[in-house]
Image (tube, rainbow over all chains, first blue to last red; front, side, top):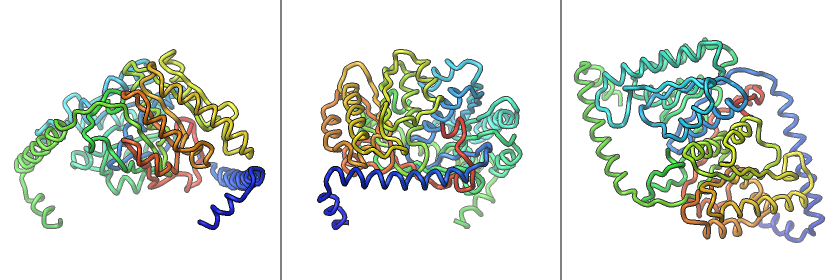
Amino acid sequence: MAQKSKTLQNMSEEQLNERHADKMKKKKAARDKIIATKTIEKGLTIVHTGKGKGKSTAAFGMVFRALGNGMKVGVIQFVKGKWGTGERVILEKMGDQVTMSSMGEGFTWETQDRQRDIDAARIAWDKAKELIMDDEHQMVLCDELNIVLRYDYLPVEEIIEVLQNKPPMKHVIITGRNAKEELIGFADLVTDMTMIKHPFRGGVKAQVGIEF
Amino acid sequence: MAQKSKTLQNMSEEQLNERHADKMKKKKAARDKIIATKTIEKGLTIVHTGKGKGKSTAAFGMVFRALGNGMKVGVIQFVKGKWGTGERVILEKMGDQVTMSSMGEGFTWETQDRQRDIDAARIAWDKAKELIMDDEHQMVLCDELNIVLRYDYLPVEEIIEVLQNKPPMKHVIITGRNAKEELIGFADLVTDMTMIKHPFRGGVKAQVGIEF
């Protein structure tokens, strides 16, 4: 490695440019070759999990992108009161391209009533199932569903069964920490948002535009 | 662990509910205590890196959330032609709340002209610097800046110097693989998007609403 840097340092600008052009050419060829083998189009089951930030935010980013592409999107919130005004304002701007539903009486970090949470999770999931199975919405976000599954308020087998039988082109995004192994096993695309550094550690509080 | 599950299995619904209420009460108390210590408000430097998906998507999610909160946001794209119509349509819907700029002649995976890329990176960074230093925008997204830094098209020291001198409440988000150690060291919030499972492996191609 040290040897390599030294060689690079001794190169003229022209040599560096040539070397770069050559490298990029090979990279492009390799990339084109890979892309050519990717021919399947299908609705994806996508899971965002992990302790880091960005699970819901990236999911909302996908929702906004889909909306920008003219798709109809369903959004189900499995944790009550988690959305800030930020997401809501933009989703509402998109009119009837969006079907939103949030658990009116559902799980929050404040609640201590397990039976009420189970009932609310069931109602939210029934709504989600409807959006996943219909022919109208092309993408459905089940935000924080993993939390509900983790507490065993809904059986993961039931969720997977619905995903197995969904319309083939439907995209479903599921977010939340501690995704169940069964769901990870079933999903097409799984990303773990890994926390490297968090400002909370330094006493910084949740702020508008960042956390909500 | 097996012992614990067995005990849980022997509990009545009522006992389970009680146990849950108790657990959640403790959780809430711990959480409230932590939040009470978080009092600092400041503009954050946020880095999304890693090989997984969602780096730019989560950044756009934050941008949309900020826009929904009425903030003015600047977005600089350091890789040419990467944005799909999805993001663009929504950003344009937000009118003059958004200042967009993308490297007209900049780095792409297709280019093999190093000197032209360096020049384009410089122009894009000059524009980013303006948005970061002004008093008008509250958030600036430097999308894929990490790629430009990785190729040493811009010195990371210069980026950090600007971040050190930015208005105190300004939020700056920097995305892209292979974030430089110096930048990770400086940033307030760093998330690594870790790929657990990717549908490309199974021959699935990039699709509207998912990749662009």
